[in-house]
Length: 409
Image (cartoon, rainbow, N blue to C red; front, side):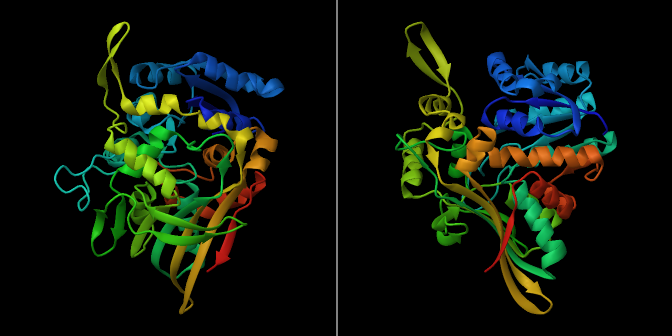
């Protein structure tokens, strides 16, 4: 895709970081930065200074499939990069297909718990709606690369790399995420979208076992202490719903796949209270206001009351680590490793003006786009990152100035 033209939908923290990272690369000709709030898109472009000539800010409603389709067509975009929250996955996913564009996202279509046995049986799984349209994408000859952030995304690339180069047989793949980040002045300040955090942390976590398939368990179950590298140290991690468990088994042969997140007791207790009060609900409720009755989502109220994660960088200290723990056999001998990527908030703020969690998420879709532009990553249908060769991705990520690591356990 020489001279790639990109439509980036979502100019929040991750979207803004994507523009800052992309501005330093030469693989594309033009990027349209679109957001419901035009001023936010304009601010993301204005921050780029002299590099802004390849960017244009526009307004679009991500829930309006027809409007997004028209924008893709008018701007002759080759690919749509979705940097919104998961509520808008399907209209953007469908708009890209209708317009004949490729598609990338960092979070997949939403899940819905089983109505009778939510902590035992899967209902609608993450990404099910997207995979149901895989044949249409294949017929169109277009690629929908789903789950291409850091987790999911880089973690899935690590799983592919482990299967191809580091193991002959894999017993278990476990995504393990932990950090030692602190935020000055706040008792509770999530470093990522609280809307997405509530969604993934309070939904039933999914576990995969080869002889059982996918099944669910209770939120925050099966705690374990995992020792994270580069000074982060031991962090208690618990089961959380996440896309990797739904993606990895489709392309990597493993007997078991899990995802565990280092949240901490205080964070978990806060989420439990939000759930008890019904403040985690996404569907609107009726509220009496000065102007009469209005419809408002409790979860949106929570998000509005908390600081924007993208604005916390100057107050944030420490490191965040995303990684993939793999256990199996190599050359007839047991092996256990942790493939990881650590970002220091001081570095990401100094180099890009983006806090660590936001930057770590944003860099991976940009790397993927560059591989697509070069033809190194290609295909059609709905694919996860582990469906594509891992080595070129990891090599290019290192060229972006953010090396990854491997630790023998």
